[in-house]
Image 1 (tube, helix red, strand yellow):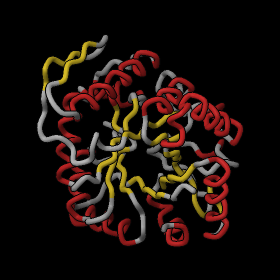
Image 2 (tube, helix red, strand yellow):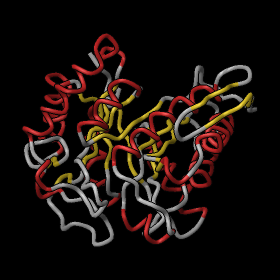
Image 3 (cartoon, one colour):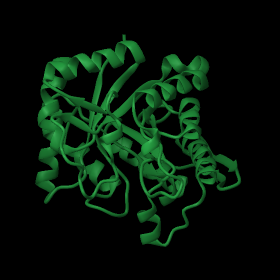
Image 4 (tube, helix red, strand yellow):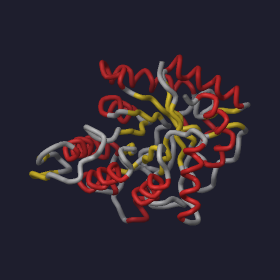
Length: 302
C-alpha cells in the first residue's frame, strides 16, 4: 500500500523569521514537503532563495517547487542551482517542473509565450539536460532548443541519480510526458493555450479519472514506481477564491482537489483516492486551509 505524503504550498512571509516559523510549523505538524510556486507576478517568493532558507530552518522537512517554469531558466542554470540546493538541504530537494504557462508572467517580462507544443518539446529536452548534468562526467546534448558541450558541473546532487522530478500535468500531452519521465505526477486542471487561466471544461471527477487512466497507460512498466499526487484547492469549509490566484475550484467537486467536511470525512476521502486510484501525495494549495488539514495529516501520516 502506498504511503501518504503531504505537502503545502507556501508563498511568502513578512520576514526571514516568519518564513522560518512557517517551515517549522509544517515540520512539527507532520507535513512532508514545503513547496513554493514559480511565477513572476503576484505575492510569491523566488524559489531558490526561499527553499534554501526553509531547508536551513528545518531538519526533516523536504523542500521543492510546484513548479519551476522551464521557460524562465536555461536547464544548465537550473541543474547547477538545484544540485547546490540538494547539497545544502542534505538531500531533501524535490524538483517540480512544468513548461511555464501564465500569460501575465510572460507579458510582464517581455517573454514570448510559445504554443503549448513548443513549450512541451522544450521541457522534454530540459529534463534530459537536468538528468545529464546531475550525472557523473562531462555531458553533451544536441537538441532543437538546447545544446550542451562537454559540461561537467559541480557539485553533484546528494540524491542519486538526482532529486526526484515532479511534473505538474493537466493537458493530455503533459500527462503523457509526466507518465514517461517523472518520478511524481501532480495531476491538475488543463490550462488554456493562451495562458489566461484553467480550462473550466476540464474539471470534475470524469476528467480526473481519465487522466489517471492515461498515466497508467503511458507509464507502462514504470507505473509501479510512480507517485501520483494532486493539489487540494479547498479543505474543510468552502471559501471564496483568492483574488490573486488563477486557481478555480468551482469545477472540481467530486475530486480530491475539493475536500469538504470534518477531519474524519476528509481522511476517509483520502483513503479512498489512495486505495482505489493510487493518489497518495496531497498538497494543500492555500495556507488558509492548513488549520483544517493539520488534523488530517496527524491522523494519516505514518
